[in-house]
Image 1: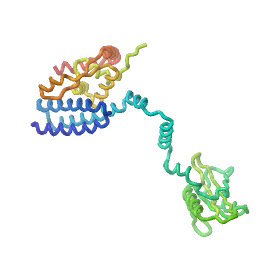
Image 2: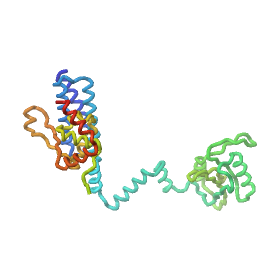
Image 3: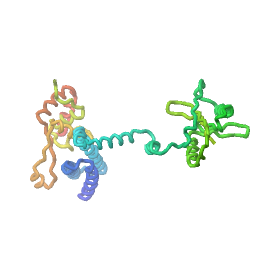
Image 4: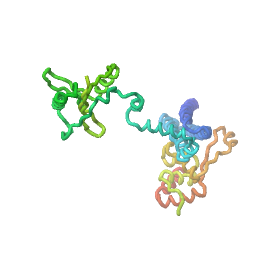
Length: 230
Length: 105
């Protein structure tokens, strides 16, 4: 192979090395690149002069160049560099608060935006003081949807303070009722109902009551049943 | 207390290779069979531990031969001591590098 393929090969290697050099801290970049380019130049010329320049050896040389990324990463993230970076990091109270907030946002599970909007936004249900939480005592952790529906209905009939009832299951499920199949809504629908109620203007002196029955499945899950105020 | 750094097998083998007279990255890779992504970070770490030191060859010599200058690595005194202790732990690699060098000659 002649000089032209070698020049092309060295050019390709230099492209890879230049990209990898962006990872290296600026102060060491020039020397780092010079060392790698020197090595590649010598390797390439050794292959050409010894008549070993072939597709396979070209690939080997290119693979060698990809190793520059590991070397460059070491320059940026080795223990001494990281410690120096931490030492020189600004340590003002304002910066510390900012760093803690960033870490909290990164560590919080789920969607951070929705978590913070929950803090800032008003409660989704405006009449939260008219809601009651009722736990089902002495019941197993799972109740049949039909049983839940009937139980809520019966409870709301027997209690004069409750003006209406609705059953909500952990999972959307269908139950058979007198008027055919009814759906028991999931927790997500409870939020939707609350939101729709927020937009309606309550009348002055309106003493509505409601019932929310929640069943804890696990420590993080709840709301198997809920009653919304009509 | 013994304050000589405990080297990994890779670092010790790289150190042994430099000690055997292979003084730049390409040669070390060729002898050890390690990829460049292993050899160069090992060289940086050894240099950081002051077990080896690097030096650029004279620019003029390289210029006269119309080639870029190379960076050479040599063992320091601490490096020689550490290597002697590492050989006690890794008994085989001295033979490995030695036989490779004799094969190349």
